[in-house]
Figure 1 (cartoon, rainbow, N blue to C red):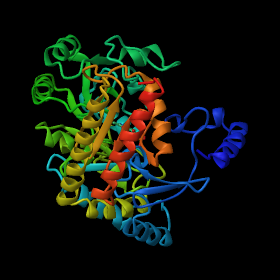
Figure 2 (cartoon, rainbow, N blue to C red):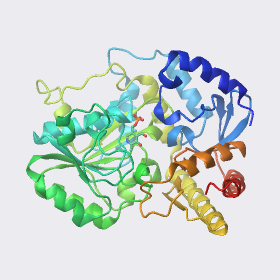
Figure 3 (cartoon, rainbow, N blue to C red):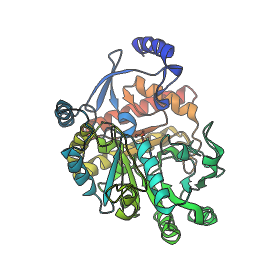
Length: 423
Ligand SMILES: Cc1ncc(COP(=O)(O)O)c(C=O)c1O
């Protein structure tokens, strides 16, 4: 595989950035492949090699790369000015478009990333309940905010552990519950009930294997929140794309607050907290100082808003269903290939999302990274890009041809990994 230009770029990058990197997820040893451009379902790397992109910026670009309608909306918005110290009409238009998609999204508030939106949802729950603790699912990822950088490594450990340097007080205020185990979760939650501001879930948590939450589990968490007064937060930054109304609705649950990001921004930086007025009013400055002041120079900037409006317009119920069906075909084909090879691997997912795990462990905890990382490179060599964790997704510019091309590349790559003795 010719990656000469990527190697040269990386040699320059290490001189000016730690490990040449500004985003841990895009690092790949010995160096990442640098991307020059993208169009539709494909990207072209720095050495001019074109590939099918099934990662789509970590599942963000649901309409693929440089979609003409998004490019037009963004270019027009940029032409009108990129941000102002006053609100803009397009913010209202986007808020209307977003709240119309799910009746639990009564009010919405914008940020510039999913991380910030998770942070604001947690702070809103704390301001609303005046309680300090949060509960999260063991192993699940919710961005870089310190309160959720606790047990976010994909492992199922129920002992709170944090990234290096996270203060003890933060770790002590983050309680960890097991996934899809109603009784196990309730036992932990009941112990901390009086202090819990919120229960934070991702209905399809990718880092612990991309298995959807069971209805029984969701019902147990809902009932606990109703009883205890804790706010149920559904982080759908990654999983919103599986249903027109979002992931939790598809799985039969209902949240007080929903955190959105990625696909709702049409490729521009975005985050949003949407939910019940009763909780969202902590942000309201119209009745005196709000319980939770929340500013940000780029909150609701008109470029992200215009891009978001255009992205939502393209994300019709039919579009969501179509890419969901393609996702199901993709998962079925991958499972068939894995079965043929006799490997003990697994493919999970829902709708347009999938994750390949080099293990058959129930929730995908502790996926052996080495085999998956090797598959990542071999797939690149066969013209397909997915995440090196095995994460991938279907985008709306894709159709039968891309799914078939993926299937052929996946089969050839998996057989190569197996032949190398790395399965
Ligand atoms: C479930 C979930 N929450 C939050 C985030 C953070 O979003 P962002 O990367 O926009 O900060 C992510 C990002 O991958 C995510 O998957």
